[in-house]
Image 1 (cartoon, one colour):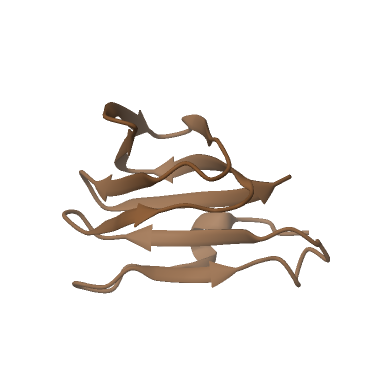
Image 2: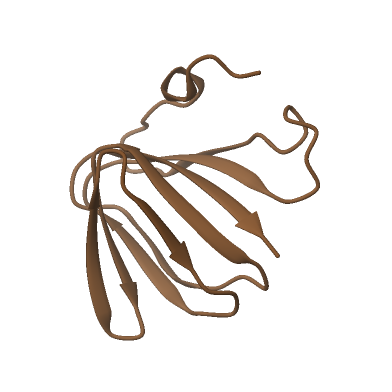
Length: 101
């Protein structure tokens, strides 16, 4: 069990912090926490698995196939498998990413 996701990861100036929770939760599929400072981005990535992105705090811009979405606190979005996408933190943002088949 994890009591508070927000306490498990911290912001670092000019760097994206990530922490895998896969082993801690005894799961087979990747589960990762991210702390992305405002103005930082994860560019043009994709995965063979569907991604579920939940914003825990902050504001995240997600671009998929030319469409742009803004996710704020508690928002949840799915990104289809093999779909190139771009994440950009509009404000300091912590998010949980779960990859599923």
